[in-house]
Image 1 (tube, rainbow, N blue to C red):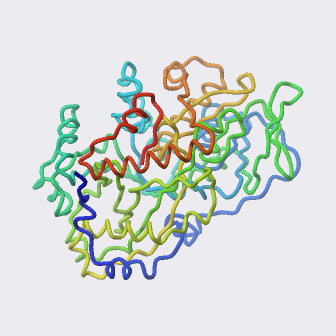
Image 2: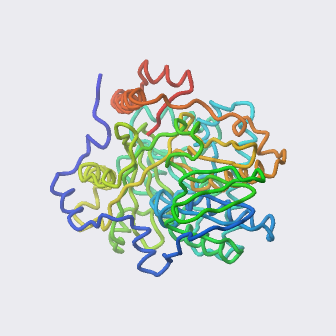
Image 3: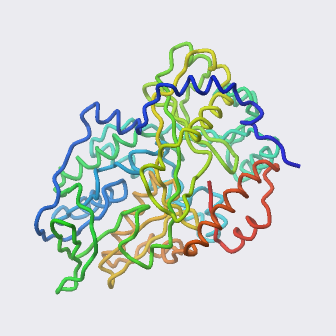
Length: 479
């Protein structure tokens, strides 16, 4: 029998939602705040020809970590980074600011897909998060980094069993009283708590711009508004990255293009673009903070198939995003898809369902935005090389990449060096997974998956035959 979800059962009046969104600016809060603070620096286009040792394509987290770590490994190595638009303008400047240690998109996905090597993957994830923190400190990047941990709320009766399974795997399970003591979400039945060992929060725009400045201090040349049109083979066996106004000849290349069409044609069906929507509140007043508690400022999520994510920023705002991952027919990427008042209104309704005590306090949202995510069928990044080992790539982070991208940078640099390391010997690295089918089959399958996930949330978590079949063959779609 179909039942209403927690957010439907506790939905606020529509006027509450409309009033809270009335003055919300359509812009990513992180990038807007960074621009106002003077952190967003305009860099030149590539004009003419350059020669270098390593060319990095993509100026988000993946590309910047690759450039920085390449210089830290070998300060004499010449590195050029080419960004199609502006540094950090896409996923790296629009995400929820969660930094999860998992490099497998969570323990369940990791244990299911790589059961034999999962203990190694888990350890490498923790080591990567620790190394990321050290890098940020050593590079002097002020990005509001905090190892605060996370709470995943239980909001439905059937999720209590899922929480118990997490407890059996060693995670901390909280009952209702323990949960509301940490965060006053009155309807929560409990929560699964992760310590700061496993989750940090960060201001992603401050991090991405801090990485760019650190890269330049290390000697990396960064060019914006320089989209790479194609890769050509150089006479010496190297790579030439060709842009509209110039080209960079390099011994090696690292591709960090995330959701955008890969320069390696065989990889273009390995990811699909899905849109994720986000809200940010005004800074909470002292009275509003007292109503919700949340003194530990943990990252916040819930246990549904269509889940939310949230954090309490250092200046007292609440970020609230997630729930649905929207795929547009044909897999197109367009800026106009980011502006969806109906989805943002649904998010605002869910927010007040979780925190009804904030309804009459005058709380408003100051920003609303969306970002596009590179989803892979295995819900975790894939890696590889092309052009006889001269080109390395990583993509498919599926929305949990803020820390994983640093691991991916290490993998790409290992692969380009020809080294056999613990990272390059992983089955997760050596095998890419299954591609999505071509259109229109991709649209049909993904939309059926989205409908099925919604149905599971409305039928006490039970997955239908289609989802069970997709799980069995390793081809899926996750919200």
